[in-house]
Image (cartoon, rainbow, N blue to C red; front, top):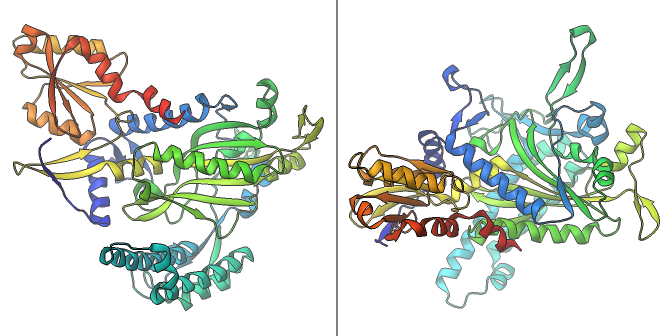
Length: 520
């Protein structure tokens, strides 16, 4: 491998370059771009659709295929409106919003406070990094418990959290505003502290169903996929002969009328979730909650990203349905943010649907000879956020030994949109025909791309930019010895192998099967 220097990009610069790269190479486009676009709505292009599908497939296979007691469903987006009354979304699915009177910009009040706390945590981390660089046998635990500046900042965080948690639990919006004022939090745009009162805003989209407006009734676009699982709990349990504990998984679109939609595809009004609800015997839910926390963090680490990119964040305020909840956060270019939520939802959902529907939602346990409403442990991950996390970690700009540069997406090979590029060296002398033969060998097992335009060097750079793990080059020598040159995206190393070896080598490099085996 030739010597490379990876350009160090700041968070803001990195994020800007990723967004630009997504547009240039067919990953993500602004929705309705020819009409100047639609805010917080995006279309996945040819590369993006494949990467998104591969991420979804990996989650589905590892969640459903590898667990004999987890099955999948695909529930409708439209549901009876009483569903959302029972779930609490009609009355409680709100965000606390605050406006800055000078900039006319609107913000989530809780996010402003959380970002303030994150800045203090960053100061603590900076102190730790400085100290660890100075001392060879650095004890981080001892440092955190004795350093005066760290202790002062940690005390401030604790005081804010106690006050903030109390205000949220009591739905005391005046106190939430007062916290923002006392912390002297300013508007990022105007720089002023001229805030309005905090008020709640329901996030559900509503629409009408019916042939004429007089006969229509209001229904909602689902704000989450979980309720489709809960209302089908008994259908799945009985038809599948499922025994507790068991899970039901689902992927699909959800819709939230986010007022503060931002940070590219991180927060959108139309997004895709991958959720699994795990039904357990009451009293065992916290044990399963801990097990699923570990299972899910192991799954994320299986992508090959550094461990320090992930952290658990326990919720300050628990949702009305939960007795335990945490997020798996990922370090995006704009900081640590939620990637997946893990919640112990108790029996709230099934019990509530039993009350509102008048139909029992109980499970008969043949081992204990009793009926009960199961408790639920939920894992819920945003597919679009996982997509962004993957690109954030994969994107790199490099200066090569010869002074040239390249942009490369080091996407895990089993997730890459195209697994193989087949490239005839020239567009003549029988090379395209030979290349097509090789393409036909591989295309039934892997998504391949064929290109013959431009020099081979430019084609290599394009394949690097879209994350293709392997390039197969067919040259004049190939016609004589049936050997091809195969190039690795990450190392840029090239080797000659026989065409007969190709399938086995490609399978070994990009196989989803091999990746799933690592989880077992």
